Amino acid sequence: MKHDELKEKLLGLYDGPVSEKERTWVETHLACCEDCSAAMEEYKKTAAHLFAVPTFSEADEDIFTAKVMARVREKVLAPSLSFSQLAFRWLLPLAGSTVVAAWVLFSVLPSTPELANNINDPSFFTPQTVSINDNALTPVALTSSNEEMVVGWMRQ
Amino acid sequence: MNDSQVIELIRKGQTEAYGDLVRQYHKRVMGYCFSMLSNRTDADEAAQDIFVKAYQNLDKFKGDSSFSTWLYRITANHCLDILRKRNRRKNVSLDNLVEQEGSQVQKLFATSSSADRHLENAQLAHKILSTLSEDQRQILTMREAEGLEYQEIAETLGCSLDAVKGRLARARKQLQENLRHIQKSWDVQNVETKREKDL
Ligand SMILES: [Zn+2]
Image 1: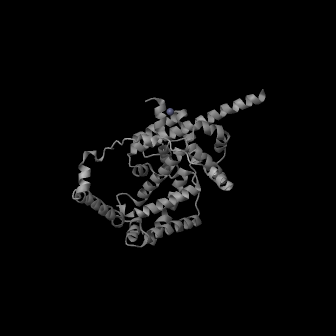
Image 2: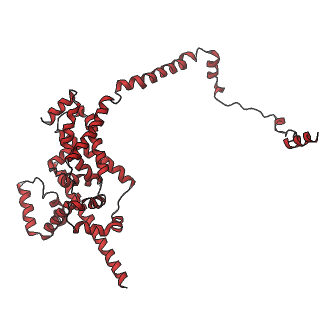
Image 3: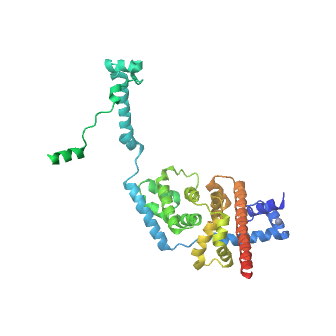
């Protein structure tokens, strides 16, 4: 094992549960390797600085507990929708409307001849070509504009 | 009364008994949230959400593990989610950190971690820890801030003891490397500024 790997391994062993063999190995290595023991000390110092946890007073605890319990009581009084409630509110109406839609599609439509025929007719869904009346495209004679009408009316 | 007896009472409808559990685990949950989120307001909000979530899922707690481990698992997952969402928005790169806070990083390690420096340092510590992956930050928080035993970490994360050793070793090494990088870059910057001044 390369020394770098040993050094990394040490970082995951020095404060953990180790076997007798591991403990002897850690102790022996740290005693004779300055590099690793310096790295270990450096790491301990770093961790103490970076992971300092703030202290909490009893008052903090009281306020916090009160806030949580207020929210818990709210949940007890207004429990979230259970599955059965959900079923009554949404699933039943949804199932009902699906049944009605299916009934219309399979029973009502085929028994309504004109609709059924139209649907069975292959041209029902294809757009029909419509011939354009050429006359419709010729410009319509312009009538007098509003302005001209007002001027005419004023002349009168 | 132990945790299981309190839970039994709650299940029988004595909701108020839950207050005892909240009080008992407040420090641990809040401490963990603070170490992961580095902000008291966010930590407070997260810790509240965690306790409410735990209450709502109390019927899923079967007692296979201790209540504290179960609660810890909820806490760990909740904070990890928040951190992932947060990091998706903003990722702290090592170089950015050196540029913005280099001198502060030096100061952080020059002073003792006394209470009065704590808040100021916490912001910076948070930025340094943000250079780690969420998983690395999580395992380091469990061990270094919360003092969880390796076995407890294994139970919380649902992995083997050997896996904990390996992950902890990698996270610690990464943290040291990142810090070394920050300090080295800062030294280089310092030398350059000094040279400019001398010229
Ligand atoms: Zn060594």
